[in-house]
Length: 190
Image (cartoon, rainbow, N blue to C red):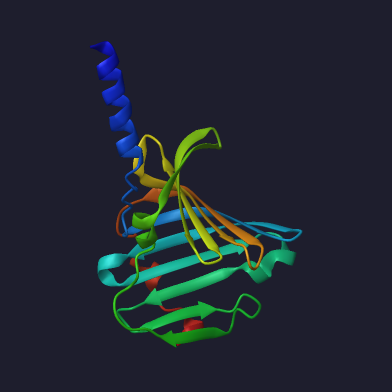
């Protein structure tokens, strides 16, 4: 009897582990960014926010070391206005504006197709890791083992460019961003 219960518990645990996590598409997060390409290893900090129902998203981060400033990012998706905006990392007075249609794509849409890759220890935390590969790009998502709705780590490995991008979600809130001005179109893009 005891053996049967143990086997059933193990099967149930494996079944849970095989179900990709469901992450909120409305959120805000403080993030740490790492970029690895060749001999370059850059570390930066920033913020990511998305309000799926309002068709708005923003991501921005900066790198501390001046030699890595070319990796700075500011991208604003305003599907409600019909445009994506990006500020040039080398010339922060220059904005690129691109017309978009439809609805804002989900940040975590790909996770439903991901495969479970096991548990990994990151910064003394156990995370369940999920991967998805398309062509030369491999995406990875680590969620807290005790809370699969909480992303902890996102990674992207590009085998063609031989580069790796890692985002650690330092603070995660699955809610509409507290300050709606985070989605304001920057003056450079007016």
